[in-house]
Image 1 (cartoon, rainbow, N blue to C red):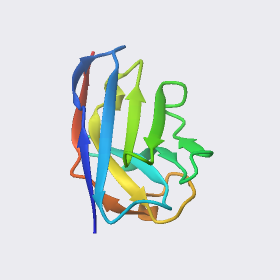
Image 2 (image 1 turned 45 degrees about the vertical axis):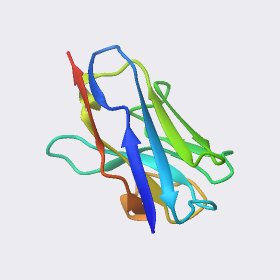
Image 3 (image 1 turned 90 degrees about the horizontal axis):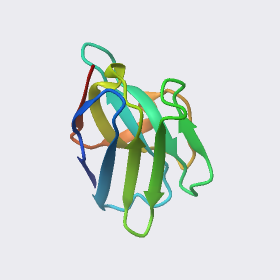
Image 4 (image 1 turned 180 degrees about the vertical axis):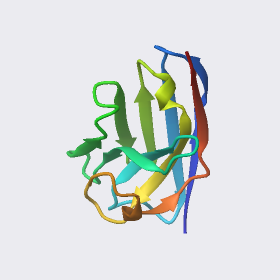
Amino acid sequence: QVQLVESGGGVVQAGGSLRLSCTASGRSFNGYAMGWVRQPPGKEREPVAAVSWSGSNIYYADSVKGRFTISRDIAKNTVDLQMNSLKPEDTAIYYCARRNRPTVGGPHTHEYDYWGQGTQVTVSS
């Protein structure tokens, strides 16, 4: 069993920044890629960023490229998402999730097998 706990969500004005953190416990997430998946109100979940097990490969959705940065610390079992230049359309519940493989992929939520409880990010205009 893997437990993922997110923190760092909140309310911010457009143009502002937030940093989300995720801590994994239980069965190790060693050997697996990790990602952040968001669900805007009334919409389906969409992966926005992922980092491979080695850390050498990273995926970003086109909508967040240049604004979001994902990072992981294997020793601490953490994965963070730095979000800059936030827009109202970034408003969503953000989930930390483990991919079921060591590599990053595209916008495929079925490739994630363990999920955190989610943290709300609200960007006001």
